[in-house]
Image (cartoon, rainbow, N blue to C red; front, side):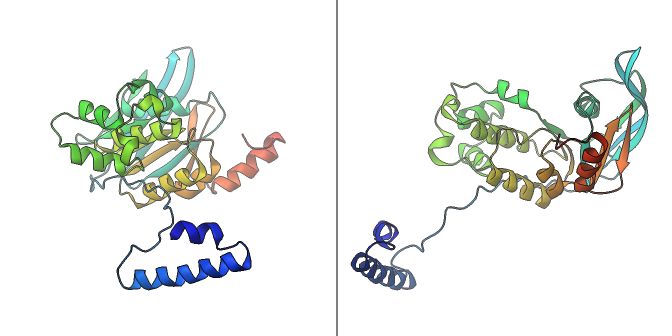
Length: 275
């Protein structure tokens, strides 16, 4: 009946009348509880598990200097702190060291001088494009999660993947049959299962459509942890970032305006369009 209404509700006068009649019947059935209410396809809902609070300082840079070689420094004498209330977007020219800064935060890179202090109980999860290489394409998302987090019930794993918009058959088919965007969701589910206090996101939207990016933004805004974001997606930055930090000239400085002001600043300075 629903299909009939959808197909013929806007056709010839006779068919449209029949469709309208069926629509009234369907409405009566819905009111009487005889059939489920027609629901629109809902936009994918992402959800990160809340983690509570850690007392600051959670992550602190103390006089940090870093370069891949001592005679080619990327950063010099950095002093700043990040806590669980932080919602920071790192911007700046390519090659200025935005991804490098994230690696210093996780401990993947070590300063040449100074120190990065992390709270003893701090759990950090980092999203980057190379995580897709971690996925075994022959496994399903469900098999991958069970393998990564052994000892958990299948239903718990199904629910954790479902929180990132991957449901039904998509959970159990080989990941080689999933789209890039669906694989990104598997990675988000994998990261979220660790219950991180802080998310470091390096270009998280490369394979996501606008609706999915909006769902990610909503999930980040509802979540209670800290976030540091590297992205060329000014729309996402505008939705989730409370602070804009500019990585440039061997230092990190806080931008006083919002991301749209920064975008105008870039255009004025370079006489170019968006990065």
